[in-house]
Length: 352
Image (cartoon, rainbow, N blue to C red; front, side, top):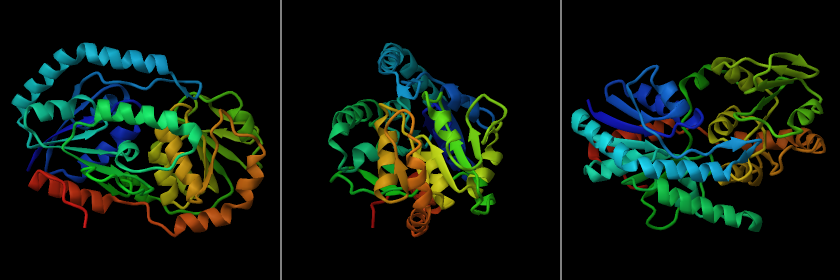
């Protein structure tokens, strides 16, 4: 048995969902989580959690609120001495063997101070560990995001990056790329191709988003809203992980933001995508860009997609499905094997 200190970025549910999948797979180990906000609330249902403030990325009307994000980083900096001492005391008490960080700010820093090996396990480092050829209008966002990730979240010992796309790594990146980690109940679903479209948004939508969904000539099952009931072809669904996965596995295609978790699950089920990334969130743009570049669907960079996209998506679904189903998007066995090796050897095995 090993003791593992596990830092998890708490904005949204994707990081915590991934961390839960990892921890549930290793019941022989003892986990102590460090998280905040939504992540802490989700993790503490099953595991002990130390709540620790972290930099956040607020989203308003489908845009990153840059000013609020800067203020959050400043609050973290102001609290850093106190929170660092608190976590060092917890390390002294818990005596972990290794640490893992999923885009969390403090754990890799205190692990380094305590001489504790720390593995970064997330998707965000695909931005900094790999080379990308992005459109010119995204270069400023690419540079700014690279600076932010390297400055705030890049003090781990090694980097295991999970991603549905696999661009070339930079030399000396201390990183490996593996396919996505899928949560356990994904494997309980049998994919099928029904008539409905699944629409998911984790944040408040942009003006015009529901108008676009109304233009789709199919039933649309909408997740992530606070609405209930039906409105024309829209069927607003209650929050339900199992319900979401069942409708995802059986839909015709998916309309969603640029979050890596849902995109990966949709691809695992063989579903074409229309991805509308949050404006100002470069990692979301990058996910959408690769969906389009690899022929898995379309990317729309504006606030609300135009109805003119619908015939294009509908007419190309067979080709999208063919492209998707030629690949595998489940990295659970590979990732768990690498985690086993990291816990045992205190280092990430080199890529073969």
